[in-house]
Every structure is written in C-alpha cells, then in structure tokens.
Image (tube, rainbow, N blue to C red; front, top):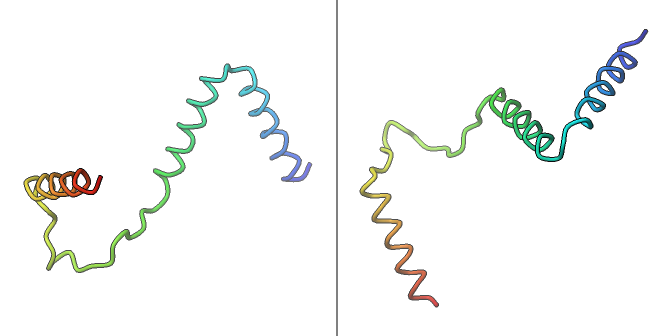
Length: 77
C-alpha cells in the first residue's frame, strides 16, 4: 500500500466522521484546527525596527491616540 493510499484513507475517515457532526460542531472543529495550525507556525516579524531604541507605547498614549482618532473621525462626518 502506498503512502498516497494511506493518506487518502485517513483523510476519508476524517471526512466521514466530520460529516456526522452538525454544522455548528463542524465550524467549531474547523476553527480549533486553524488556531492550532497558526499557533504551531513560527511568528514572523511584523515591524522591522530596533526594539532597543523604540519603547512600546504606554496605555495612556494608546488612549490618547484613540481619543484623537475618534475626534478626527467625528469631525470628518
């Protein structure tokens, strides 16, 4: 038996079991599998900057930015 046949049999068994679940359970299972796959991946760099020279913003700074953005958004309407 080749690897492809074994993989297809396993995949077919999984699909047949998932078909037995209702739609909500299928959705939950799919979400859990996606989260598990994403969690197992190595995180890539989001921003390319020198973290030793640039400090993370404080909660006060974030709140200030949030309020300023909301003011600009309400004035634009």
